[in-house]
Image (tube, rainbow over all chains, first blue to last red; front, side, top):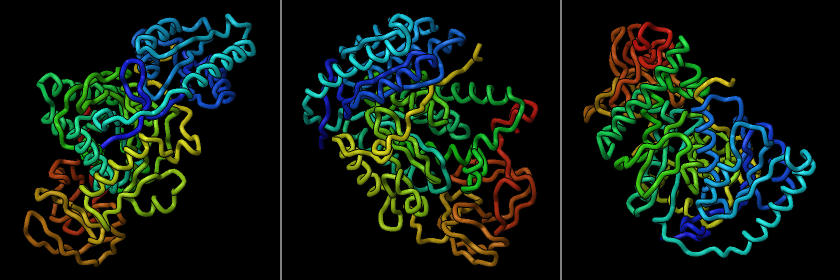
Length: 383
Length: 103
């Protein structure tokens, strides 16, 4: 099977053809947003980090911005900075340029302020969109698909129905030689031993166990029970009693195959197979991590109904909860109907949906443009 | 395969709880299969869609098992057919409120 994609200079394939408007720092966020609002065909990446952070966090921001810029769904990138921030715009530009795609930068303090920078940014973005619009889609084998998965606003149907369906889709794509990525390390807690058994090497198994131990220590350092935050109030109302129960239902979305690698937050995955990217479960941070990993499409399994999209990665929202599907039809794309099909059949249908969306079918979040405010993980204080 | 036409589901033969696939009422009698054996459970309370009830008597401070894995520890006697949720199960993980962080 195949899909229609945009071949990039480095050989990677995108399923969308946006120009990314990526802000380096919170101070340039409005500017990046305004440029993207003025130029059709652009997608902003806005966030509240990039300055007054400790070194480990600045390293996370830099590598995440570079990885996002390299995502093949972007035909080109305009990096938008203020000028005095901790993040070095030239470093971000140089990192993205290695992918071979066009990348430029503007700094507001060097262009006479916001108004001058807005005019220059719009001019550059317009040129980039014009050039990107000349790229003709080509047929690509499904082995070139890179998909991610996330579950959010979970209830019991997530673990029983929609997560298994997403897992079946992962298994199908991996059998065809494609690439799948998942994360949400916090939601491995209580189930990490099962994932560790699926690791290709002892080193990967150790990193899975260690990543959970690290987040558990950070949670415990707060001196409280994490119930209410994980599982969240809605999860509990949906029937999930503990983080262990939530995790055991959550990991099912990764399918059953061998885990071939483990990456840090903001890293791009290399090669084909099934990979973990270390990340928390909250949407703004995990969706960014998946986009940075290089996924073209994200499967988002939900029980109670999470609305998020992502600026330049289509997100297919699926649910096994019939009430949610009926009442939230403006942002749920796919119903896993266990009354009429098996998990294996649902996985096949979802796989076809991935191919359709990859070839250009719009997701509901894309159409209503919901999901413009993602974020980047921080591990230290704002200083 | 899970059929939502069923009233409740037991996911693993080791489980001591089942999950309701509809809004169940106190007094409802459920015919379930646990590890290949038929088991009849009468509910002692209402159990909402997606929530859990006990298949066996569970002593206090014992493992509550779903998916064949421990999902938490009981905090009271849980009788067969009782509603199982945050009022009688606690997590063993991420417990910064306890010394050592684990229960």
